[in-house]
Image 1 (cartoon, rainbow, N blue to C red):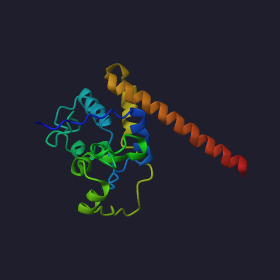
Image 2: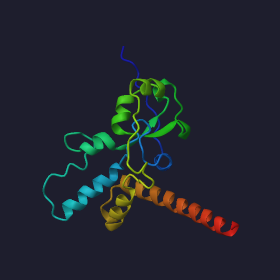
Image 3: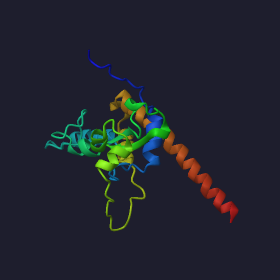
Length: 184
């Protein structure tokens, strides 16, 4: 008898966006920057429409290494710290940003098992950790605004969710700046 495959509910876009920005778009396991795959899809479309006909290898739906090496390794995905298949909670407290490669390598192992077998080495940067990395969300927002009629339903949904998140975030940071200036 074949084992029953565990299906889990989809993670809402809004939750994914919150987790990505909370983690600074850095992989929890290898600490490298991740990229927002829909941005690379729109970037490839943009260069094609501009007449560039040489291979780009920016995007593939399945993140295949031979046709989209950056996504194969660095695509931003949501990972469960405690695997869902091991009764890990399917909620924001158990979600982290991971690169596609680490997510595949970790599989259903616990965070402790994975980190023991793959000790994360600190990424050495001459000037420290990235402060404003956005996973190429800005590229996605600019390119998706350029021709919204060409967006797929999924891309439109991502755009709306990102717009909502970014507008709430800027309102919150504006409130902090206003409160700080009032306090001084």
